[in-house]
Image 1 (cartoon, helix red, strand yellow):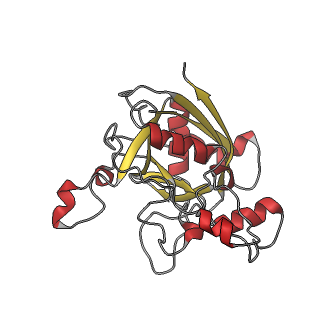
Image 2 (spheres, helix red, strand yellow):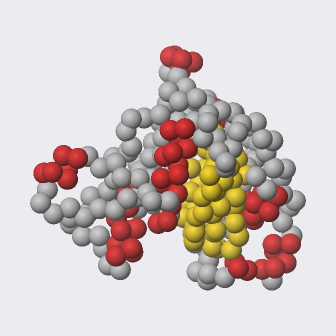
Image 3 (cartoon, helix red, strand yellow):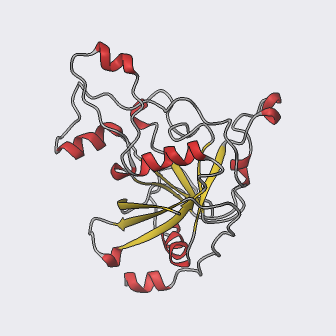
Amino acid sequence: SQYEEVKALPPAQPIPAVTNRITYVVQMIIDIGAKRDNYNAGYIRFGLYGDDSPLSVKQMLFFLTKGITSMDQETLEDRLEVDYMPVSMGNGSVQTISPGKGIVFGVPSQSKAYAENKGMRTAGANFVPQNRPLPTLEGEKFPRPHSCAGLISIPAKGIGYDNNSDTSNLDEIYSSAFTITDAPLPDLDKPSTTTKSAQQQPPSHRVIGQIIDDESMQFLERLATLPVQKKLGKGGTSGPPLLKVRVRDVDVQKVK
């Protein structure tokens, strides 16, 4: 049974040591599968390092709640009819599960999210997706390395700049918005380029927070062991979850 599968999970990994001041606490309620019930749901509660990376944390909070609006103003001024919507985790889901590495959250398609939100089959010809946020954030502080499971990580330039996203398709640039690590990921502390000047380049990703309780670490382990879709002809254990995994609700509390 599903209950037995959950009970058979390996023990959750330890909560990350608190090395930076937590300024916001976020709780995400996450549904596994189509049913919205407590048996098929869980939560991940994490803190964000607003003192160390204030711009990154602000961007993350916008993405988790009201959404990011970063459209080119010329687009709005030049077109008589424009349909658009802030891009947020409220329209997102778990995109990739990589056992022993991490869980990637994001919005796979802004146009599909808009159509679903409006109850339409397609977004229509007037829909314009959000661009990447500016200015980029690679100059901001890197609070800690990707040294354990349970860390919250975003691209160094900011949400929307992940190297795995299709840079030519604005509709999908938020598909890899942030990652929760399931193990140490030292590769994310390396520059994204491999050129001779890479040593002067900042890390490709920035840790901006951490999981803060045992229940969240246990649910992270459950997510990391969900079955994934296998692409024909390709090996490996990573992929999109077989069942849809969506964020039902997000609550944010400021730490006084």
